[in-house]
Length: 191
Image 1: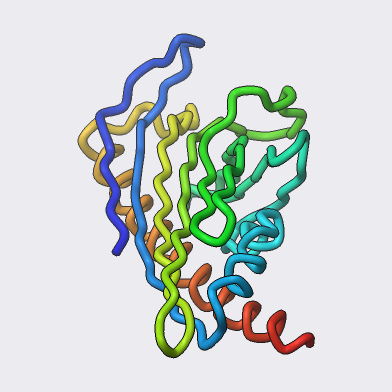
Image 2 (image 1 turned 180 degrees about the horizontal axis):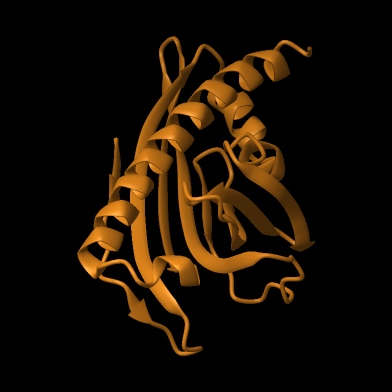
């Protein structure tokens, strides 16, 4: 399930016209593998997040700290990138939480770049035939509105942002689900 909640376009502290967006997705993975093996797989945070559709890069910048860069287009020929600085918190064998981190280095990426906040949690439940992993992702971001779009009515921009976010969240969770399922089975079998 993916949801998006936009607000009206506004101006941020730097004077940029922005649209605030947020969304959440929840998915339950079921693997015919013991919980400790599933947990070990998800501990490789960069490898897991690299499976997100449109993930351009994920690099560590400190112990359990990672920068995820996700690229997108706004449908009008404008390419943009969202930066998510993350801190991974491990509860061995039980859960892995990823929360926003404010200690990331300065971004040095050309183009329309903005920061976002991403939280995720994988909770592991042993089952008789394997393991269930409940995976929740929450995203919030202030997206700069390209100057060419600022002349459009606010309600139109809001609707456009809402539809785009819902589509992107659905695409990301569907692709992420398929990619993790395939990758986990290959990883677990040693391929």
